[in-house]
Image (cartoon, rainbow over all chains, first blue to last red; front, side):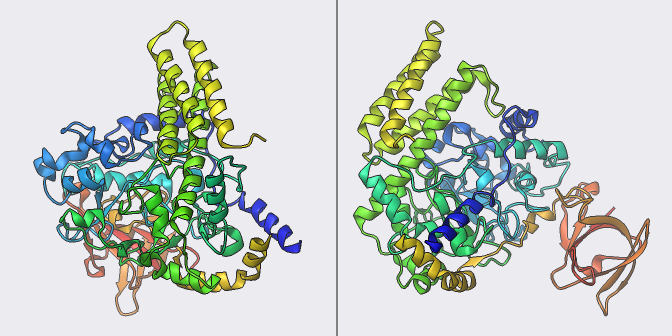
Length: 448
Length: 130
């Protein structure tokens, strides 16, 4: 009983650490930040933050989304801008694998010294970038210049990705964000996605997802909860101590064989992770919206959520420093069979869908109540609700989960589409969508 | 309940093995883009953890640099980790990495020092090249 009390205390304290405060939606900085995020080029090459973090694709990019872009999209600058033709991006790797170029170890040998990384989404940042040792921004936790904060991240991004030429001269090739702009960009980003961590276990109705949750939190099998406490980005305080927050690990992703990027035949130097020279560690992403934001890991090595879970059953992980530490600490590595892998993935798919439904309802209620959400444009709220509903359908149907909920979600999507098309009956259509979303949610989780 | 007990019984083992072997505590900022940020513009640093000043003297032997501020002179320590950046942005030229040898008395520079460390070690120095 003593242990249970200690554990519960640790859980309650954990809710208080590892998070930043999200600004209220009405904060003018949020709306200002949104405008900057999607429209401001900072006098550079035409890219905006939204070029790689588009709202309509969950603030990340993947090959399927990239394939829908026109050839003159700023993502493909080397194809049509002679100043950036070489050593700025590799558009083959962008198109095929969704990888962008980062000169994290310096700009003195652009031809040979670079890393190719996927684009992490910017959802739920309030709960994913705080650590005991300071802010963790970017894939290796050291993505921001200056004071390392999310606020400062935009300055580094402008220098790396917005420049007109490879000289990267401030005032010539771009302008740096002002203090006011940095404040606004931070406020907008903190307003996105879930503001609170989940509190596991959830009362899931699907037996496969429920079993997946059990395995996720089991020290003998999944062991996922050690680094993804409550399926988030923060380390388990019962394991790493209070306030550990987001941590970096060397999990051996770089050692995976047959990585899609490498199979293209393009040059991809090894990525040494945090620091210069690096220590081969990368930070821990939240899993709450993982199912909809693949490909996975810093190098987009794995396409599906099932594959990402299966990674931890493989040799690359179990032979890695993190895998070996887990072996020493618990007496075994991670050995999970196909059914267990699918079960954990099912759990992650369901919590993703629950988040989609919650966000979709927030958008619709905000529209119907004419309440202001500064991180969205009012007239686009039904559209955003439709995107979230569609995402829920994709993540559930992709795992063959909850066909009844998927039917309700499709009904909700239809009602949203009807509301968008016709002004008459719009309110009723959106109310119908809300009712269908409630029915879908009830099919996923036992209502408290 | 069994799982919880195992976690707590093994807590010391978890901590000692995982902390030592597996993870890294981030103490780094993205220093590689810092070179392109002109003097006085480093986000969250300029004006808070740095000062813009004039070089008074440099004693290369014991790695001490004396700088002149409005409030008087101050000694700072150059270490092996100290980075030197040459800020040429006013000339509309590309900023470069430099060395301590590029720093001359009378130059204007921004110094980011590491707080709460004895001897005032310097994280980076940006030297204005005009």
